[in-house]
Image (tube, rainbow, N blue to C red):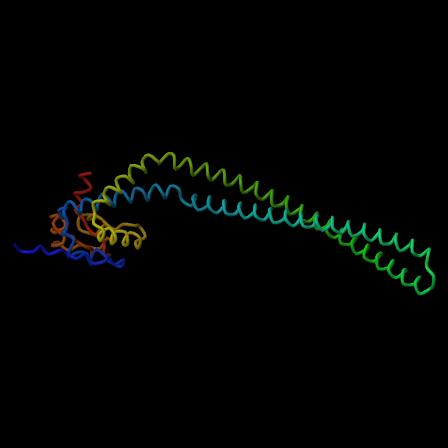
Length: 272
């Protein structure tokens, strides 16, 4: 008994086009006509999904940008609050320093009453002067920190106002987007179900080429019908009569020699 030869699958090249898969296109459980019709249906579903996404326009990216901006502003507020907390801690520490200075000054003043010579007197006075200087420095720091707190509180108010404005914008855009999504969700779900069904039937190599062509074209058309009886529906270049006959036969994968798209029988559109 002859041993069955196992077919070796070659890896999918992400640069593959419909031209490169043309030779093994018919190597499938589906007939060529069924495969072409499935690809056409897949393209139609994707095109309708594209239209729905176009209705949303820039709203999804605008919503995401506003959410990111608001998060950044909230982070800015948190940083400002942390600075204010640091200044308050600094004020408290300097107040303690003033109390320490006053305690030391009182102690040195008491010692002045018991000095025994001028040298000791001068030394104690010097310590008093140092403590008074430290006290003034602490008072200066407290004043500076209080001013910084006022500045930071003004920044907080400005940032809060910014957040309020951006939040209103975000709510309006989210409501607009939600309304569009809600009005099209049923249709979109049905289209995505149709798309998934078609994609599950098509082999991985053909799907890879389909996705690549779709991404490379500005109108995202990888599969087109004959336009105006004798032209490619993608690039609108003329198709020779022999090719038109082959397209109408549904027995061969026909690629536009100008744009690389699949051209299918226009009758497919009338059979939907």
